[in-house]
Length: 196
Image 1: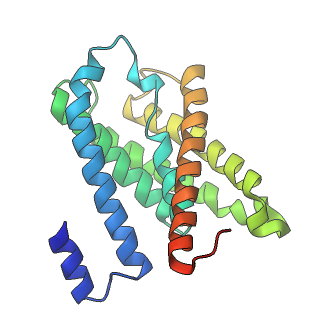
Image 2 (image 1 turned 180 degrees about the horizontal axis):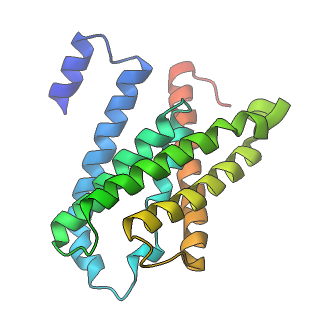
């Protein structure tokens, strides 16, 4: 990791938003791979249908809340969803779904989420940054629909949309929004010394 950081310093990327973003993405991907690789076999033994606990609902909300730029929902959702589920499939070696549907589900739901987010400024209205409740609810709605869309494509409709999956998506979307917002505020505080 130090090697990547040194190369980024030489190119002048560290200190810029893109440099910080790339470092965050690298750390998150490595963390997801390590945690998933270690715990997937143990969690697979539990009598739980993991499609009912859509952990991927955290990713898009987290990405946009941490770095509120166009394309962040798409990038974080697609990249991290493929990394998480791909790692699970590689570790467990027994998936009943095809890779092409994983990629297609991530891309299609990521495009939907990006389009959904384009309407956020209208939802927030004149209040701008003070409309955090509206932003949170809009992003949670995005995660619920986007995650359901993702699983419908990946499973080719086999599992169907379940109420528990929608509720879990809403909760995990809220967690992703909160964690991303916390990181954004932390970065702002480190940069300026001002709490907002």
